[in-house]
Amino acid sequence: MTDEEQARVDAALKELVKLSAAYEAAERALDKRRDALHSAIVKHLMDRTLKPGEVEKNTPYDRNHIRRIAQAAGVPPLRERTVRSAKEDA
Image 1 (cartoon, rainbow, N blue to C red):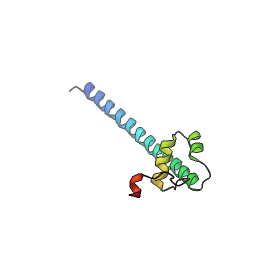
Image 2 (cartoon, rainbow, N blue to C red; image 1 turned 45 degrees about the horizontal axis):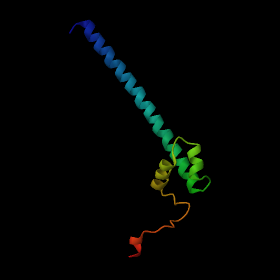
Image 3 (cartoon, rainbow, N blue to C red; image 1 turned 180 degrees about the vertical axis):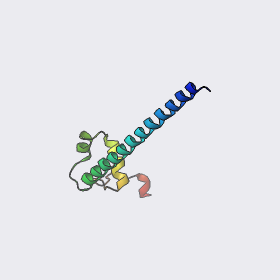
Image 4 (cartoon, rainbow, N blue to C red; image 1 turned 90 degrees about the vertical axis):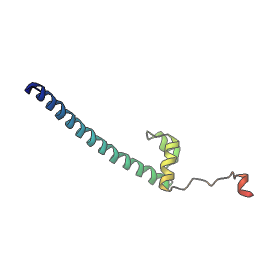
């Protein structure tokens, strides 16, 4: 490999390392902000400040994803189940 070719390879590797580091930093920042958003969603749902529909209108998530976040955090449902399985009675 010539010096010129080696210089091109070194430059390409340096560019990839630099871009990868920037990407990972952005990913860490995104994770931090996502965690903060999820915490706020759980807090407001737990305190009953907002209903899931209101959260949906003001976040990038749909109701189903908000429900998954709430269930994972142990937020109790707004109302108890009214429909029971016939198998439960047996």
